Length: 102
Image 1 (cartoon, rainbow, N blue to C red):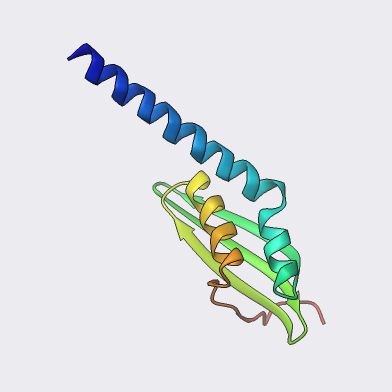
Image 2 (cartoon, one colour):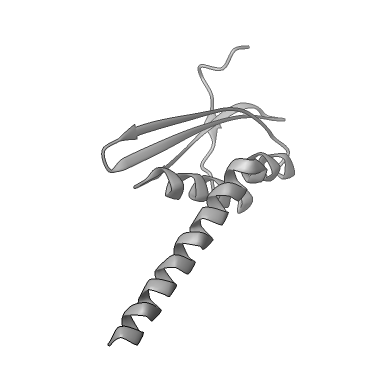
């Protein structure tokens, strides 16, 4: 039984380290690089947190003009990973940014 508990602890540690690495990659330029690859430039990133809910508002300029996208998750690390992943996969739902300075 002790071996099984230790294996579960090791598995949890590995998952935690893997998640930390993904968060670091997202923060260290994964989002910006993905947007540049899609022809855009990151102009803003706002994080709104409430208990049990995180919303990231991404602002970028594309050839079509200023755009805004929203990505939500349950926690901040998950939201950062998700926004970088969705940008890399071109899955962020962009819409025209009505509030962008012209």
